[in-house]
Length: 177
Image (cartoon, rainbow, N blue to C red; front, top):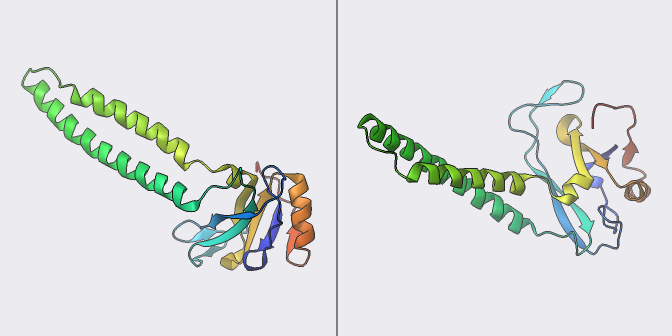
């Protein structure tokens, strides 16, 4: 694990996923949860908003931010609409059952579509490959420093060489990370 000042971090020009040469930069959002954030010492703080880090990646692992955000927005809207339709269909189905009529095909159809939408939401909202290789573990007080887990050891070594004055290896934390 590496602790580094967010504003002074310089990422090497190699891809953290495959280790190849990198020319494009992809954004990793550093966004603490809403409300007070608990740090590793248990102190409470209300930090500034979202910040971002630009990480160099190769062409194969580059994914534009707007494409990913558009997919998340579309998935959230679709799921919300289907949950509303499910509520309406449950009301109609309960009315049909109370009158002794069979339930319309709409209820099972909406349930299936909502299930598909939920599966797609799991796939769309999971971390990208870049976010799995450069994982944000936590923050220091004031959210000036970020704790990163760099999965690729060669990338971590090059990262430490480029940030000698601003990064430090943290090896005293060993909680299921």
